[in-house]
Structure formats: structure tokens, C-alpha cells
Length: 104
Image (cartoon, rainbow, N blue to C red):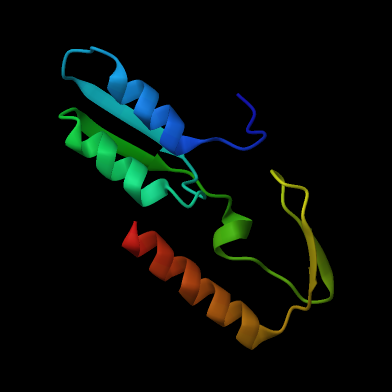
């Protein structure tokens, strides 16, 4: 499998939950980088299945190493941004990512 493009997690979960399936095990493999991630996981959990979430993130997303000016390109949208490897900015980013992961 190769990751590519955007996923409508909310729509995928709604479609999955609308099926008349016996209760069992549901496994969600996702980076959860969508605004509907928390709501989607909650809906899966409330459907009565035993839910396991495999949260997959690239190491460079969680703990980037930047020393100079870098141009970042969003793999899904193609959006670009230039940033500088300022250490305080990196610390703030790492803290924000850690909080986000804990909140999920």
C-alpha cells in the first residue's frame, strides 16, 4: 500500500457503520490528520465493535529536524510553506504535536 491523496474519514466511518455487520473487531489505520478524526473515532467506538486504532505518523512529522530554511510541501494538498529551523519554533511545534496525540 502507498499512502496518497486525501481521505474523507467521516464519510468512510459513516459508510462502515451503516453496514449491517455483526459486532466484532474494527481496526482503523490512519494518521488522523483530518478535522473529523476525534468524532470519527468516537462514532466507530459507539458502534459496538471492539476498536483498535493504529495511529501512523511519519517520524519527521512528530520530531522534525530543521537547521536551515526549508520549504515544506503538503503531500495531500500540495500546499507549500517556507520555514526556518529556529529551535524555539521547533520546541513549540513538538509540544503542540504531543498535546494533539494525547488528546486523540
